[in-house]
Length: 101
Image (cartoon, rainbow, N blue to C red; front, side):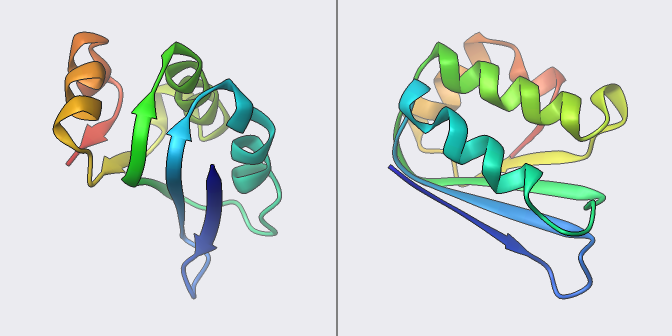
């Protein structure tokens, strides 16, 4: 599992790239990715292109990110989801909480 966080040049957006299995073993690394940025972004993008697996703890981590980013006012996009990941997000009704693309 590799997680990298890349802030935009203006600091308004933070893109978090997920590689491999997105499960409980990634919990601290994922939290560090968004909590350790110097400026508070207005938008978050979670790029799941490299994610091969997603479990219920990953869904919980995404909800923690949502809370950190402002709850109902959060602007978070989940992008580059493979069909298996998209299905899990759909079954969990995450399209009501996140922009999924």
